[in-house]
Length: 270
Image 1 (tube, rainbow, N blue to C red):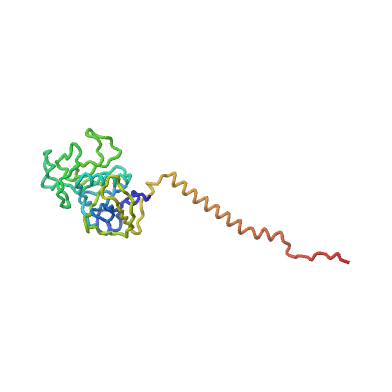
Image 2 (cartoon, helix red, strand yellow; image 1 turned 45 degrees about the horizontal axis):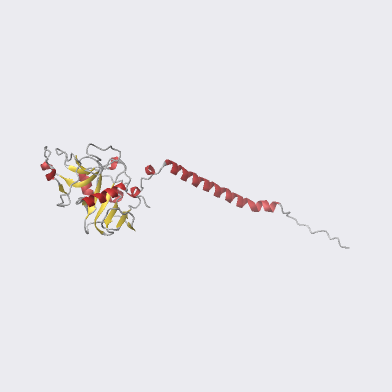
């Protein structure tokens, strides 16, 4: 089974659209194979590569989508399963929910001021027990800190909380019908991943690979496995070299036992 994590180690440096096309790596998950919506989860193993809310929003727009809108509990669970399959370390994910800057409210009654960036009118919310905290935190993340202990209200995992928009996070894009714009050559794999609680049956995964892209795989490979691989390659090379030397030496050894001047046997007949 192909490891999703290895395909999602994005290396995009915020800046131009050209940089995005050359360096980003994502993997698109579609309901029922080819049905929309589809999702692309951008997880950056290197925290320095993570981006703020507006950069994530623009990245999804350039790719033909929006930051994800989560419109039901079943859709929330589906995205949770996709993120879990990454085996990703700590790092929250931007979603497309936010307040307008002019709606900054220092009270604790700001829940009704949030809207989805793709225009969805869904009222589904998955706030943690004491969120949103309002104030200057107007953008929303899906909490993903596997190493953190549970809080007073239970596990934080995959709950939503508002955050400052300039924070650096991973992000999730969503593509509606006909909006997906493949940037890279694609490879389709059926039945690659099927969350147990989905109602749509088969899920097709489209893997986008950037040409000439060096994936950062070394941190995810156990050191012991790497040493074993190097040792095995060296031993094979050494064996092949010795075998070749033996084969080259064999004719010479055989010739050494044969006299260069063969004499006729003496004739003892009278």
